[in-house]
Length: 190
Image (cartoon, rainbow, N blue to C red):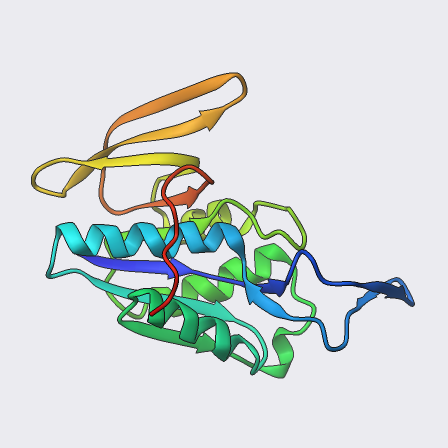
């Protein structure tokens, strides 16, 4: 199985910030992998453990500092990392980010795409669903459980909904899911 994981680098949620000219100023504050994306990387690694011929490729878009976040994903168990970087990418909206990711992802085979539920910096939760639309594949958001069939060709997917949960039965690959807290417990990198 070819698994794609989309990750984003964000400010550490405990970092001190200031607003300067209507923008966040945080010079010297630590940057981390988006916490929801850690659930996505961990789920990919667990799937690979169950289906050993799987390959995990992480994609991230951003400045040079993103390389550290990609290294973290590799140390968690991803096989390959793709860093999309261009000065023209500064200030993109979520739809533009999804379009660029889709263009890059189309260049290689994929069966499953995992994203975090949302980025903790903008809390928009739009890139994953927009990416699925651009790739013309089904998606399920706020996922707390993925149970694959024996053949790994489809899965029952449990998602969080207000006041409970919903199960989507027999979703065929390829598909995209946005991962929520509770799906797993991310490992510490080795």
